Length: 103
Image 1 (tube, rainbow, N blue to C red):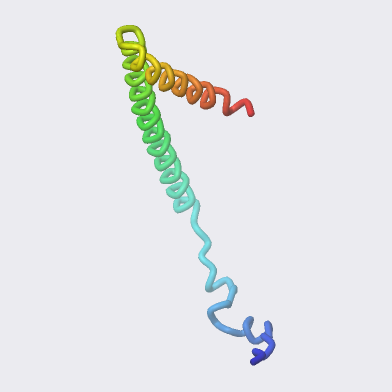
Image 2: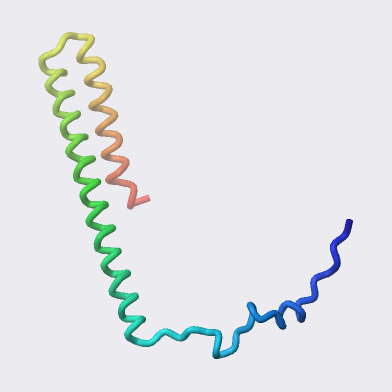
C-alpha cells in the first residue's frame, strides 16, 4: 500500500513546528555565562578524571615491567621466556602510545 504524499505546508501549520518569537527561548547573558561556567567545570572534572586513570594505568604498567625484569634477572630459563615476552609487549605498547600523536 502506498502512503499518501506528505504536504509540507500542512506540517508548517502545525503548532508544534511554530517558530515565532513567542515560542523561541532566547537565553540571557547570565544564562549563557552560567552555561559556559558549567561546561568549564565539567571539562576540568573530565581532565582530572582522565589524568587519574592514566596515572593508575602507568603505575600498573611500571609494576608489571619491574616484576618482569626481576623475574628475568632471577628466574629460570622458562621464567625468563615469558618475562621477556611481557616486557617486550609493555615496551611496544608504551612506544605506540608515545608515538600516536605523531601519526
